[in-house]
Length: 224
Image 1: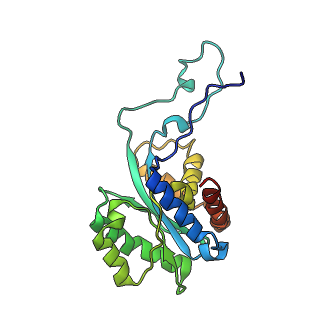
Image 2: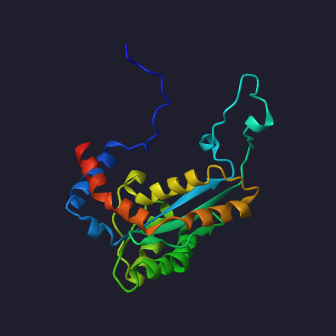
Image 3: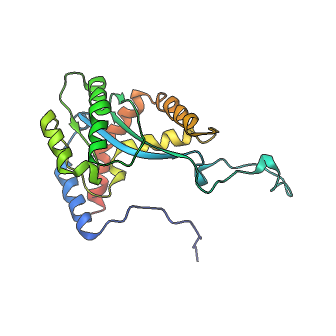
């Protein structure tokens, strides 16, 4: 009958209200050009584990070699992991921040002060920019909103549960794919590998991702 058994694609859950807000947001931004999107600094956090789950490499093996040590991938119950904050624009990437504790409003404002502002200087110089962040509680806290107001930095309004609209998610994917064959033994080696791989991202890659924003907006409108 033409059916195939497949693993379902994973998508963030969107309720009807969030769908409507997302569509309204896309319609509001439908006339933004790639040049206008280049004024936006996109940001996000991502978790990196020493064991990358199912993203590990496949192995070529013969019958009877399944238990050969060369054909095994080790698993651990609680793999060491690090949480990373990063930012990007069409000009390239900013410095990474490795988060040592749960991110509340105070911790996040510290990240903004010591990592986002230097990233803005590096990527925009004296030019104006708009900052993008998702709706995590630390990001949308009143104290954080006051921090942006005090620093005169406009924040892009953003729809809930919409990582597909954020081009930095593609960068995290690129970094994790490049790290697929890395074998860090501890958290410090993992951090060093992430830093080195992040440094390989080119401004051209970032520029292409920012250029895709009008197409992402159009896709949301087409899908209603």
